[in-house]
Image (cartoon, rainbow, N blue to C red; front, side, top):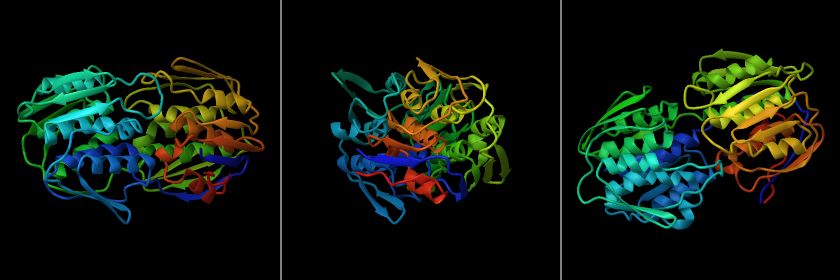
Length: 421
């Protein structure tokens, strides 16, 4: 298991640019299966989940390769609808292949998706929407198989909650379906609009991005496109949290601050200096001045506080003055990182979806284990604020969402060693 060694209390300074967003790149890779022409995703991040996605595409018969920093795909004559168990189990994003493979192969068999253990993450909305479009669904132990006897058909469908994954799945299916589809109660995250831009560049007719109602006129052949995925707002929030926790002065470039506005407003309320200028944000904090706690945050669907940033906010609040509370409305086990925080000297308690932080902690180095991707990043942020040395056993999580978090933070002045194998 990779291990990070982090020496805290070193101010961060410099400039950093987030890579393309994992949460855009992974569904876009699946969407390329819908296309009859070649596709190129510019500067696709080198992440473990991206590598798994490329392996999955090859396994079902797609022609995909790396070309420098880009990922290029070409349409395959035929694809297979069987998703290998080991690839489905490696990441949650295997669910994005339901609609493209159902369309291309006429069937798809999906073993239970893997990924971070954040609590129940049902795919019932994905399946209900696909069933409404004409899919026949069979459950086989830990796998589900979808088949179609004819073309998918457009529907008027209301999501029971604004699931990002289900919205993307049904958006892809609607492009392949005959007739008009209206998706109501759709997610509005920036990554949804990014997929709409890609599909539209391929020839799809879609309106309503950035709203909760998407209208898709399907059945049109999709060509290829060249597309640059959205910058990673969660990585940008991670760098902002790191400099707030450790102190220093860092400029985050190339990522519109509007797409992580809620997190930036939170940091400003703790006492960090936040200055915006176009697609740049400057975060500064004097480590001698205590942060302000007393936060009461709820992580929820866009435009609320993003669930992936909730553990990062918790890491910032550990040393802040005053009790703070964070609730995650989306995932039942978002705060598994609380055990690591406690090992570092924080007074915090996780109960279900809620985390209570007493604040004012004098953090110290400890031996901790990353329970999941964002929890691992949050433990790294907390370690930057701690006295002494922290050993973070990662279990391979952080590399799933960050190209090189250790190297990036080290470039800013952090005392962090590359993870050992």
